[in-house]
Length: 229
Length: 229
DNA sequence: CACAAGTATGCTGCATACAGAATTTTGTTT
DNA sequence: AAACAAAATTCTGTATGCAGCATACTTGTG
Image 1 (cartoon, rainbow over the protein chains, first blue to last red):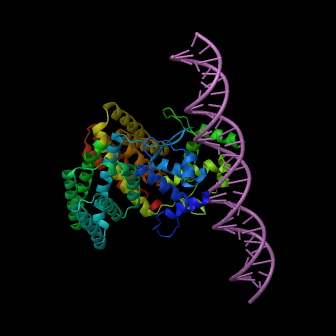
Image 2: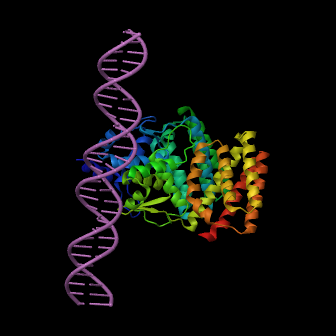
Image 3: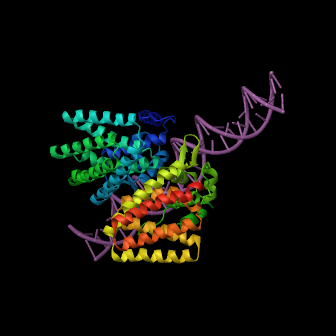
C-alpha cells in the first residue's frame, strides 16, 4: 500500500528532463517543495515525519533525505531534536533576496544579449506576446506563469549554468510570496511596461539597457510585495 | 565502536556558532565537504556508502542524508541506482561560476560601503595588513587563508544574508580549484595590488570603485586558475 | 486553585535488515 | 584466446526497529 502511493508520487513527477528517469527522491523533493511554495505547508509549520510520510505514501527514510535536501535549498530549517520547520522569511530576508535576484537577472540579461541566438530571442518574443494577450484579458494566473517563463528564459539564454542554478534557489524561496503579492491595476501596468522595454532591449541586444531594466524591475517588485509580508 | 568514532567526529566540528550544539548531520556534511575541497575525494570519485560510513564511524542512514545535502549544494552528483559521485567541473563551469562570483562580490562591495561600520572596516583593514605581512614573507598558505577571510568579511559587511548564502555555495564549489591554482610571482603581485585598491576604496566608501575592483579581481582569478583545470 | 515535579507519550535520530538493481566474476563456447 | 552468458557478489534504495530526548499530561503539594 505504501509502495502504491509512492509509485503514484513518481508518476506525478513532471519528467520532461533529458535522459534520467525520475527517482523517488526527486519526486518527494519536488512534491514537498510545491507544498511549501503553494502555501499548503505554511511558514513556521513543523513537519511531522510520520504523518507527512504516510500522506505521501513513503517511509521515513527517503522522506528525511528529501527534507535534508530542502534544508540545503533554504526552504526548511532544522532545529536539532525537533525536526524540520518551514522557513519563515522576514521582510528583510525578502528584500535582501530581491536585491540579489535583481543583480543576478541584470547579469543574465547582459550575458543573454551576448550569447542568445536570434531564434531564441524570437521564442522569448513569443512568450512575451502571449503574456500581453493575457494582460489584455486581465487573466492573472496565465499572465503570472508566462511572466515567470520569460524571466527563466532570459536566465537560460545567458548560457551560464552556475547563474541559472543560484537564481533558481533564490527564486524558489520567494515564489510563494510573489505569488501572493497581487498588485493593483496601476502597478500591473508598470510591470507590463517594464516587460515591453525588456523585450525591445533584448531584440536590440542592448546589454546595458536590458541589464538595467531587469535590475530595476526587481526593485519595483519589492514595492509590489512588501505589504503582502 | 561506531558511536565512539561518531562522537569524535562531532568533537571535530568547529562550533563557534551561537547557541545550537553541533549535530552529527552537520559534522558529517562539514567533514565530507572538506574531503572534497581538499582533494581527498577527487572529482569523479564514486562515493561508497559502506566504506565511507565505516571510515567516518557512522551508519549509512545519516551519511546518506548528508550526501543528499551536498548534492543540493552542487558538490556531488546523483546517478540513480549508482549513488553519489564527486562532481566534476568543466573549464566552462569554473569560468561561469567566476563570472557570477565576481558579480556577487561586486554587489557585496557596493552594499558594504553603505552598511559597514567604521569599526568593521577597521577589522578588514587589519586582516589586510596581516595578509600583506604574509605576502612580504611569501608565506603562501596563511596568505591564502587571510585572502579568503577578507573576501568573506566584505560579503558579511554587506549585511545581506541571501547574498552571503549564495556566495558561499558557489565559493565552496570552486575552493579546491582556487587552492590548486598557484600563480607565479607577477600575477601574485597583481592580486596584491588589487587588494590594496580594495581596502582603499572600502575606507573611502567608494562603492563604484570597490565594486569594480572586486568584479575585475574575479575576472583575473580566471586567468590565474584556467591552466590548472 | 496555582504551580511544580514526576510520569507518560510521542517524535526524532540512528542503526540495522531486506529487496532489487548493478557489477563483477566465472564458466562455457566458438 | 576471446567473447558471450550466467551466476554470484556487491551496492543502492527503502522499510523497520530501537534508544534517547522533548513535550505534554498528570498528580501531588503549598
